[in-house]
Length: 143
Ligand SMILES: NC(=O)c1ccc[n+]([C@@H]2O[C@H](COP(=O)([O-])OP(=O)(O)OC[C@H]3O[C@@H](n4cnc5c(N)ncnc54)[C@H](OP(=O)(O)O)[C@@H]3O)[C@@H](O)[C@H]2O)c1
Image (tube, rainbow, N blue to C red; front, top):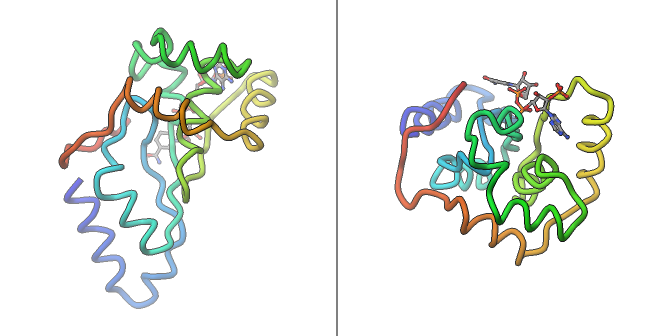
């Protein structure tokens, strides 16, 4: 976390460093380390955060995600798949975009639908409580 943030601070100091418009980092419901400091920093400096692996590689990066009762409840309530719920979670945040990878046409269509969907605050909180953001700096996950 510290290294990434220091790197961003350094970037800001080089000529035209503030032309940086997007930072791509790993982010999904089961990996929320960036929310502690990096995400607010990016928002403050108007750098968009692009979430890679927003579906936790179809849940394989954190197996309990797709089996989680809150994820399933939000999916059932909104007529979504668990993967769509994971995508909706990252897109709920202001200043966040996502690059889910999908090879299957049906997956691409499912994911594209989430561009017009926003979780309610209640559903967001349910998910957030199931997989809370860290309350202090943590090492950031990478793949
Ligand atoms: N900057 C970096 O260091 C970095 C590192 C890793 C990845 N990335 C980028 O991030 C992007 C995504 O990463 P990723 O592929 O590792 O993880 P991901 O997007 O979290 O997961 C992709 C997996 O989810 C499946 N999937 C997609 N949509 C689905 C849906 N609606 N229902 C069920 N399964 C679904 C895909 O299956 P199918 O393919 O079968 O549809 C694939 O197995 C890629 O574009 C990659 O290049 C960047």
